[in-house]
Image: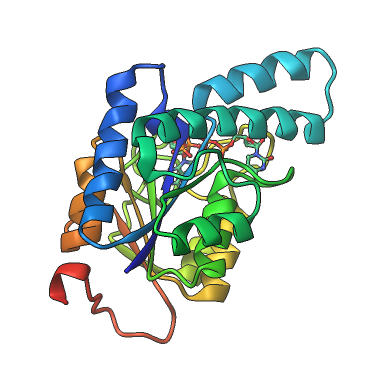
Length: 239
Ligand SMILES: Nc1ncnc2c1ncn2[C@@H]1O[C@H](COP(=O)(O)OP(=O)(O)O)[C@@H](O)[C@H]1O
Ligand SMILES: O=c1ccn([C@@H]2O[C@H](COP(=O)(O)OP(=O)(O)O)[C@@H](O)[C@H]2O)c(=O)[nH]1
C-alpha cells in the first residue's frame, strides 16, 4: 500500500521539541514496517508564519513570502529526516520525480514545499497523484474538515464523510495568502477531486492516530470519498 502523509508544521513542529518529531518518525517507521511505501510532506507551521510576517512588514511580495515559507518547510523536513535516520532519503525531495524514485527504492521520501503559490497540502495531493497512492492522509491540528473554521465558529459542523467536490466548495471560501490556514488548500482539493485518491483529514497531534487510520481504518476525522465509488473503504489490515 502506497501512502502519502501530509504533516502540518503546526503538528510536527509547533516548537522544536525533539520528542514530537521522534513520535512522528516512529509512526512512519511503524507504517513502513507494516509494508507501506511512504511519502511524507512536511509543512512550515508557526515558524513559517513568523518569518512570513516579518518579511511582509519588510515589504516582501507574496511570491517572495512563499519562497521563505518553502525554505522553512524544508527545514522542518530535515528534522523528520534526521529522526528517521537511514529509513529516509537524505535530503528533502524538490521534485515529485525524486520523491517517487526514493519511494520505489523503499526509502521514506520526505518533502517540503515545491513552488510558490500553494501550500504543502497541494504538494501532498500532487505526490499522491504522481505516485498513484492508495491513500492520502492529512495530519492537521483540527479533527477534520468542518463547515466553517472551528476555531472561529463554534457552530461549525464536523464532516465524517464528504465528496471531493464538497471539499472543493468548502475550501473555496477560505482566503488564500502566504501563511494562511485551512485543513487543505484549494489546489489540493482540486487535485484530490481530479485524481480520485482516497483521502483522510484528521487531528494528527498524536501520531498514533495516523497509524490507526492507515493500518486499521480507525479515525475520528473526515473521509473524503472519491466520487463514483461506494462508501466502503478497504484498509491495509483487510488484506
Ligand atoms: N472549514 C474548516 N475546517 C477545518 N479547519 C479549518 C476550516 N477553515 C479554516 N480552518 C483552520 O485550518 C487550520 C488548519 O490549518 P493549518 O493551521 O495550516 O494546519 P497545518 O499546519 O496542519 O497545515 C485549523 O486550525 C483551522 O483553524
Ligand atoms: O509548495 C509550497 C509549499 C509551501 N509554500 C509556502 O510556505 C508556507 C508554509 O507551508 P504550509 O502552509 O504548507 O505549512 P503549514 O502552515 O500548513 O504547516 C505556505 O503558506 C506558503 O506560503 C509555498 O509557497 N509552496
